[in-house]
Image (cartoon, rainbow, N blue to C red):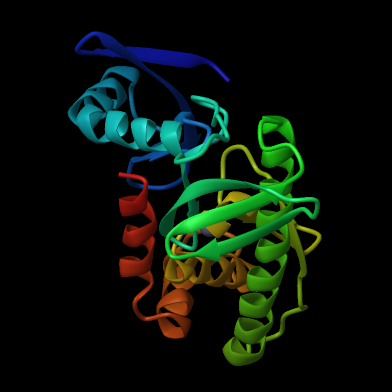
Length: 235
Ligand SMILES: [Zn+2]
């Protein structure tokens, strides 16, 4: 995809543009720090640039948030005292020497026990496995509850898949696989629920039309606040 850029102070914001049939322009900053503008088909490049420029302060804030949230940029060090998130809460890393590997949450600390606490790769691995396990547990629970509660008309139950995604929190494939980004386990529960509810509504309505939002509002009247909370966490 072609990249455009604008200057923001001493920084440069790179963004790509997707043209769709929608009537309004939307700017999104994804967890991998990419900026994607979804624009109506007839919008011209200069008008898009101007919109991006007007929102540049917000965009930079989002990017900076993701930079500390994402282990990749800058890389997490996996050292004592470092912040790591779980269900919207911040925990400090505490490494403990132990023959048995384990992870426990104790009074604001992520206590990771392992044989060699200086083996950062191992700490990362243990922590990731723990997140993965929790993500499976929490996402499945929410997914099953919602599926039973929503009673979506004429629809087939999707398969839930949890994996690391680069640019989105969730998606629904045409063959009925609902994928949730494992990184979402770091966000507040209300926001996880919002993402799963949103994707489940796509089972009935593929695109983000009026009917889609009517259904989403029916099953989750406060979806907008939850979405905001997710974005706030990234702010
Ligand atoms: Zn959607």
